Image (cartoon, rainbow, N blue to C red; front, side):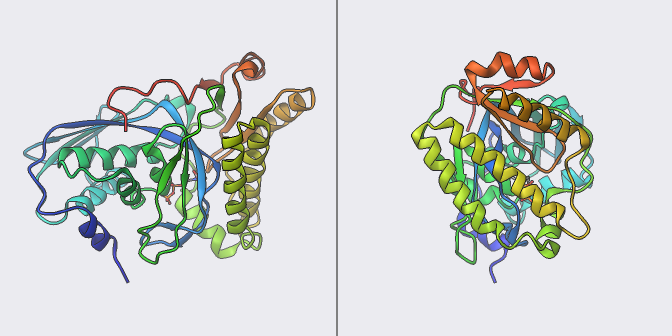
Length: 335
Ligand code: 2P0
């Protein structure tokens, strides 16, 4: 069986050159057709493909510079090396660099407002992978960066491009065909609203939540095939510029994912009463003609998708929602 270290050794040519200073931005992303379930935990391989929209200027900026000792500064705060989030970063750096790596100063900043309550592991590991590639001048193709970032976090595979991105589950045992690529069709009117419900840390990590769902949920079995079909149908709707079809499919897919979790034993429940209240308000407005749809991930917050002409209506329903234009110009230094 191939190990993570062997995959990195096969793709990152060593010995590495001396690091130079590098600064990279990667956007966060929200899945319209969700990744839920792993077929291999060690190689972090998914049971199904997924399709996302990147969040434009919302993401992570990571700077790497040569240093005398390792340091990691996250949102202006120095992190102890053994803090769980920091340990994940250093494990990934060690995988990328192999033995005897030089000391590095890593500084990483999220441009996602904390109040939005969005996870940052997708943009975080994409920015880290791209910054390592730039710092060591390994010049890897983006598909390879996407494949390697998977070892930090599955959703990071999708954060190397703006707009719509698809992550193919792949079939190879070693996962070398499990990476993302862009769907080069823009929907310039596409908008996202983040309706924050709960911005505290989540009760159960998505890794644990999905592992438990796969192991115990009697509703999980049909999910991988359903997710593949949803990916294909959403991709077709993107190419056709058919927002109404895309939106309904994305909402159906999210609710189906949550249904697999709720049937787990014991249940995995990320949605809170207030999440359902947001959905009730949305569905009532939709019955009155508003074309907006919801998607929810491993947390209680609700993300709405709609087109620009509906912005004022969405804002009046949810005055505190943060509205994102995913097709605005990316920040300097973006992947
Ligand atoms: C997604 N989520 O497709 C799905 C939908 C959450 C719900 O990808 O275990 O942090 O690190 O590969 O990428 C969140 O899971 O999980 C996620 P790991 P990750 O966006």
